Image (cartoon, rainbow, N blue to C red):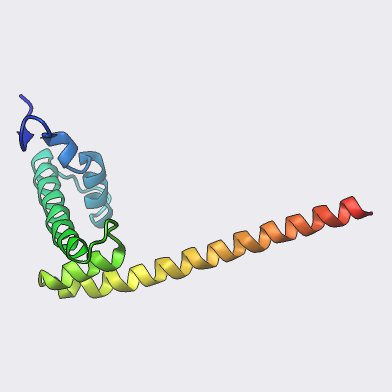
Length: 129
């Protein structure tokens, strides 16, 4: 039996609403000792919880975006939602991660640009000689 959420016309199947259980189990095992096992029941419970949590935070961020007449939700919106919902202990580290990620992506883009410019100038030099 497959559970559906929502109306018949735009319903979401239960398995589409949840994170893949293999991913949840992998994340859970990362923190455990190598010989530890995680029961199917524990994985399914955690799968429900994290999927619900993501939906909860995303819904709050989405409300903010609608008020501001924006269609795209970004990392700052997610951090804001975490704080607005009282998850300050998690919002701070998430915001720091977001800034490091953006710095890294910016550095990577600059390196790619430099490599492309270097390749182009070498190609131009070779064609001129």
